Structure formats: C-alpha cells, structure tokens
Image 1 (spheres, rainbow, N blue to C red):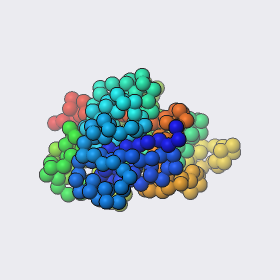
Image 2: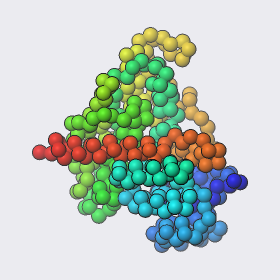
Image 3: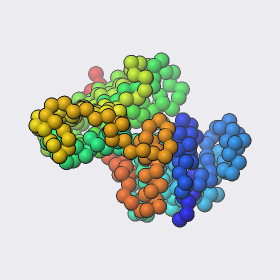
Image 4: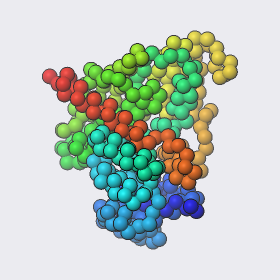
Length: 344
C-alpha cells in the first residue's frame, strides 16, 4: 500500500480540523468528502479540485475506492455509516462517542474485530503526552495502589439559554454534556484505572439547555476497593478552553494532572524515575513528542497519524471501538442510575 486513500464524512469543526491534519500525512491521499451543507461543498469544490464531493455519505461509500474514512458527524448518525464501511472493508476512525447506543457499539466492535479492520474512536486524551506519562506512572506503580480518583472536565460550550433547536440540545442526536464532554472524562478513567463495576449517586443538572444536562457528577465504585468521582460542566464561563483534569491518590503518592502539566507527590524519593520526596512538577514541554503538523494540540495529530500507522503497519490500536463501547456502557449506567435514584 503506497498511500492510504481516505474519505471524510462530515465537514463541520472537527471535520475541518481532521482534514487539515491528515492532509499533512505523506502517506495519505484524501479522495473524497461528504457533507450535507451545499455551502461547504461549493467552497471545497472551488479550492480542492482533485477531491470528489458528495451530499450523501452513501454515494461516497458506493462510488469511491477508499481504504479508510474519518467520520465527524453527530454520533446518532454513525451506526449506519460505520456498518456500510465495514461491508466495503474500509477502516474507520470515528469521532467520540462513535454511537449513542452501547448495544449498537458492541455490535460494531464485534463486526470490525471479525473483519480485522482498523477501528478507532477519537478519545484524544489517550494521545496527550501528559496523560500518557500519567498512565505510565500508574501502570508502573509509582504512586502505589490507586485508592481514590477524581476526573473533571469544564468548558464554556453552552453559556446562554438553548431553545432545543440544535443537535447539542437533543440526547437522541448525541447532544448533552454527557455524550459531548463527560465521555472524555469517563474514557480517561477507563484508560488510567479501568471500567467501574458500579455507578452511583449520579446528578444531572440543566443550566442553560432545555432538553439535556449541562453538568453531571457521579461516583464510580470498583470491586478492588478503588472509588472515584467525575464532575463535568460545559457551562462554566471561567474556563476559556475545554480543560480535562485528573487526580489520583495512591498508597505511595498522588498525581494532579491536566493536558499541560502534572504534579506528583511522592512519600519517598524514587531515583530511577528522577522523583524526589514531596512535590515534583512535569510540564508538557518536558515530555512532549514532536509532531509534523500542529493543530489545537499534539494529541490531535498523534491520534490520526496513529490511525494511519495501524493501517499501514498492522499495529495495535490504542483506542478501539471496544474502548468506546466500554465508555458507552458506563454512560448507560449514568443515565439509568439518575433515572432510578437521582430524580426527585
């Protein structure tokens, strides 16, 4: 395979971001784009004359000889797209949470595993160099056995009253703080600690939205004795950009991390890791791996280049549909717990 022939379905904010990144890859040839917006398609046709454009993703999948697709549509639309792609033997990268239904997510997982097709979900935190270092610390026992954690995410996504007219204000379309943002906080937990055995004490709060939650908090419990919380709010105007935070407390120390740095408290020095007793601070500039094209953060390039590497070199993917399905199962438990116990 000389170049990976690739199509992009959905050309909104994330579609444009992914287009700019993947177009920089020397082993990728973007052949086609599908979007329902005639304005977007007319602009693309004006400046990208060697790419084929479609108003319907079905036409793209039927007409194009492609190896892979990037899917950047609202998650409620993704099941049909991904299933059609599997029938054509096409590798898929899908923006999170990749569907809104854990049963369908598991169906797609088994389908792609059976066909041995590369499948990846856009949980970009797994490719952030800070969180990757935190993962190494946890797995190597630097802070001992994890006892407690807190996973948080905040943004100013919704800061005025919503009238229920956009997909973000419809849970059926994949809107709401849980699908749109808490899924990142949940995936970070499953990445670092594992999938919880029980979800309890869930609270969902509307602030500006009419039909969906703007804030969520919940408690995760594990049979191993670990417990932790998630706290997510996409209506927090004190944050200029979306911010992910994770706190991990273990028997030997503690970690406080966000996308840009982490602080690690050690009860005893660990010379082989260059960690002294007390607080140690590591910045993204200390650990980042350079990427050939930068948009929004190294991790956005790293995840897409990883997808292409998995196709060309048949390497193991770091964020598969199975990982995405695990997060969706936790989301199902959040909604169920709230409906059973959290509503007054």
